[in-house]
Length: 287
Length: 123
Image (tube, rainbow over all chains, first blue to last red; front, side, top):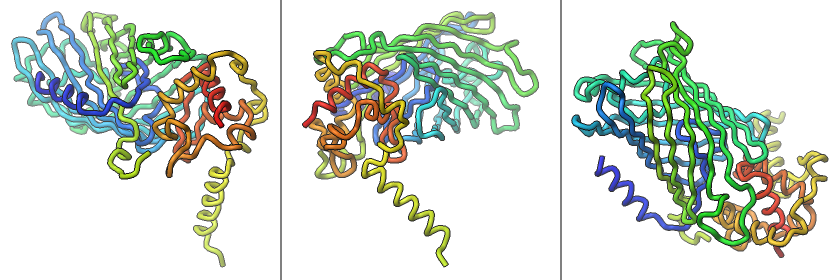
């Protein structure tokens, strides 16, 4: 895990400091806003928690996101985790694509999301909560669950709205393990707003418009045979981020388990860096 | 006999050419055209708009808004004289996604109007 962290830092240091990011402060919820075409975002996302009957863990994802078109964004993840008194392991990869079918802003803007993931049972990044995912899954020893293969297809319907500075986003999730298991369902919703809507006339670092705050809620909705919130985990928490003038965005969110099947507290934190017009940097004569 | 695929191609080509030629102006609904910029006479709006421009727009359109091979110049009679503030606001909110211009509704109305102030001040 330390090697990952060093790699992330290495990448961030190598990149030129000339670009800016303005991200929503969500960790799980997707908004309808796509990556700008040609831009590359590198993000290092982490989650830490301690299930009551298990060891404290740190799940991490290294994420690379690229805007192919205004209406098409692709993203690749490498996942890993470390569990106290157990081990540090690589848990798999994910590849997702998001498509925006409507080319104008509407009250509600849909985005279609398709993901393939090849991870193992020890994955603790909690990029989504579906089905009957719960604290028991996070308590099992790495040595036992890492042998479990999870090749899954995940579909999301992302709905997003921007109104008077607020963003409200809703995600409906359906996931299927390709090993003949039933469809599982989940959701994530979020609302956020910059702390100030107007820009400052002078460059600034900690002015209020560089901060965004909001709230995020997510959880499982059972599966095809037992749809609902019974025996699922549910989380709610505030979330905040800050975009520095040199293009780095820092995010933090504590989440609180809302029922007995949830981990009581989860802490998420992330660092993101956006490279504007990534491929153009390799072309001669770029302005 | 004209092939249907050729007709479709020509229609697409004409619509793209119209976009390049400011065709987006004709798509702005009348109600949007008439919107006025609440920051029009406010001191500091142009400077604030420049900050927004440098942060979000300059990597495509250039620091001086002169554009490049792939992205149009924003210093033109169409932007500074022909388009109303409401039309520019509409373009920024909705983008022109088929042409590679993303929507900027995430900035919120105040920053978009500040950006309109800046664009109108260019010459």
